[in-house]
Length: 452
Image (tube, rainbow, N blue to C red; front, side):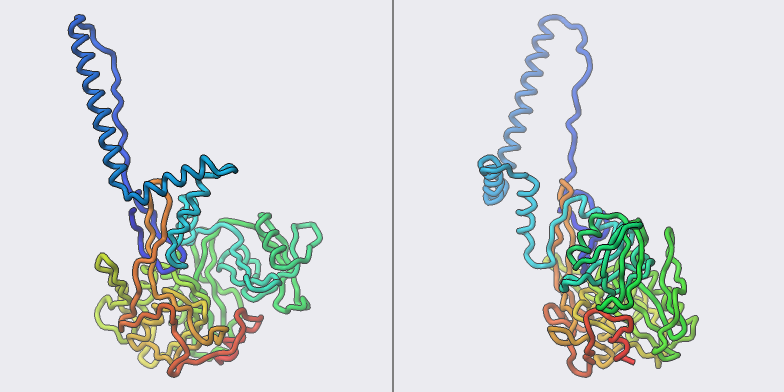
């Protein structure tokens, strides 16, 4: 199978060529020229001999190909057909194979996608999304917003992480109250919605918002300081715009930058936020990686290039990933920390149990080069204690000739100092700080409030 760009997230990268190329056999066409009878007979004999030879060669090729396949694969194909022909109810061949493909998932990060599913994942990985841009928390009976994608219809309508959804409906109709499953079913079934939302569980602050499914450019960064809050807006091109008042609790010399994924235009957005920090005269940075599940290794290398204080050389190592084929060394795109930070600048990193993969690798690179120390990390004290997720492995996608795609774990990932945090995560050891805060924030983010 062909291989695409490596990723540490749930999403893929660029389209890849098929596993094999197919060739069409040229058709024999034309009108036979007049000839004498004996010549026709000889020609017919030659044509018959050629056809017989071709058929024999094809048969030999098929037989040799068939028996060159692992006997267990042949047996599996035979069993599939046996089930399809003999099961007492009709069996859909695609469903049957999907179940078999799923059986190839050797860990929770492996997966199988159809060609259509993978195409949608590619588009989302490039930041070209379609929908509401809204996800709900899965662990509560009440409908509660887990996340809204920046610049999505839901986010632009005013929905934020931590909000409750009390009721739903369509424009001009009375809203219906319901729990998480009822709200989720409504959103899936409708292309536009009116929602009653608020941060207080009793609904005393409820307000109504309306929005529709749409195509949109997803954004992955936001910037704030004590005087203003900025997010990326735009339909064909994203521009950093002021959207609200600042975070009054932030010190006057400190900027806040939240990075939600390592996808799409995240690297370009990250640089733009750093430029805004410098332009607005902020020295220090609070980098918020809470609930950032990772993304492209290439995006990680681009973002890391601005954050490696003690690194030497034009392209310092960000991570290594040994494989059976030798492995990969991932290097930063550059090394320009001094462009955005002074020698006495201080970076604080926020993380939680959903900070995973490329996010953990970015933290690891910053720790390895002395940009931050453990005491600069603030972790949410969750059910498993104060820690990050612990995903220190990398996946690659392989495409078969029929368009089906397998995502397979291909390597452990190591920080520049040789550390691998797989299954362990970054924990509140040494001087790292543990913050008591809920999974989702209220209108006043308890995590940030505790920090300042």
